Length: 541
Image (cartoon, rainbow, N blue to C red; front, side, top):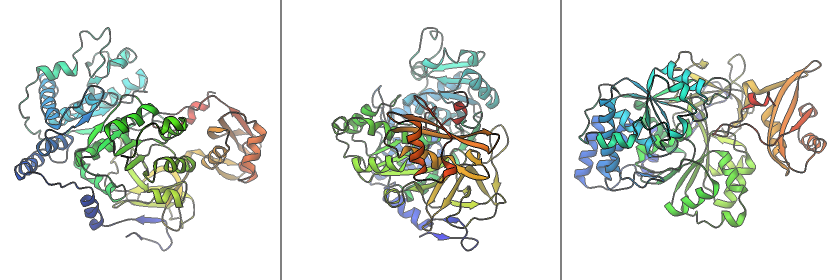
């Protein structure tokens, strides 16, 4: 069980033990009854490939060769088929000059092309750089130059828009080749021409670089090596995932949250259920059709599902769901409660970042008993709350959040690092721990508004506004004010509410100095695919 470490009363918490993780691995049934000869071959595959992306599919192909590896709109390849296809793809990529240590950028929606590209690159010992489909051509060009990526694997739909960034680079089309791509090789062409023979093991494992969300600036690169793959087992201490589950991953695989479940799928030999675009109704239909047991989403996706008419939501049988794991942005307590009321006690909320992977996980019981919490640190994770001088803050007090675990990054690929204190990395968020060790996020450190000498957290204003029945979305920011230094301005998506009524609503629950001085009504708020609010874009509205 957990214990508090360090200065008495200090907000530092480490949860679990090695025994707890061993029990979690047992509950996940990572080791299942399989023919002894298959186990022997699987152990040999693991010995060859180590803790890499290639290892996950090599081991699964020995244990479960005829089982579905991926379900997408192009069909259902088995683990044995993925092994052969990625052998062929790796051989063809090597024939085109891609070698161990080379950097290859990947820009794909959620489909087998993404998965097979990463497995093939891992078999070569090449590094994969995951690009965000929302990036503009200048951003893409800057990232490709910074990471040294001379080859880009991308979906054809992005080729025209990003053409300025692709000049002088080798492009390979993962799917949906468009007019103008006629002279560009596709992954299917490469698979057809490649040698299916088993690949030699590279002398060094490839790494995967994930870009930060870029909500506070240009996206930075965070490298994840395959050697950290098994560290993900600590998530099993908090989330009841099982091996050989059908896992629907709705967020983009190129984001940390989608990629985390891709990595877990390697460990658990999961069948990945993928769709290139999210649609609330189609997602429920897929859960019914594929008997999905774990669905991975971001909070805005839960909101879109709840916005469906109740007769549409209940049209599909979703009783197969055991877990719905969410992360990527703030999960509003009302959405969490409403979703569990509708779909059962299946919701798990993870707080983390690209730099620290995970920091805390809230189980359904946490979300019920302490609305708004992001949960407790799982096994092997330390969370500390400190004041501006780095001193521990007692439980209940707000301060900067520092995190340490097996997946904390070692620095950005272009150099530089986040703030580190005693081996713990600053997430950039402010928060507090309650008496039971549950973590709450009070806002971004750079989102704190100082008005008239008072500290105001934008998140508490947003939460208050969202409790009004007419408000669908809200954002609070600080703007310059000659008298108070800063004043609070709120941007609101609402129907049938006026400014004064919303101010009175906030005044009923928060201190007077936290009431927005002005409220701007908008049709929508700018968010990235993970649902994170892009407050910098509000400055132009």
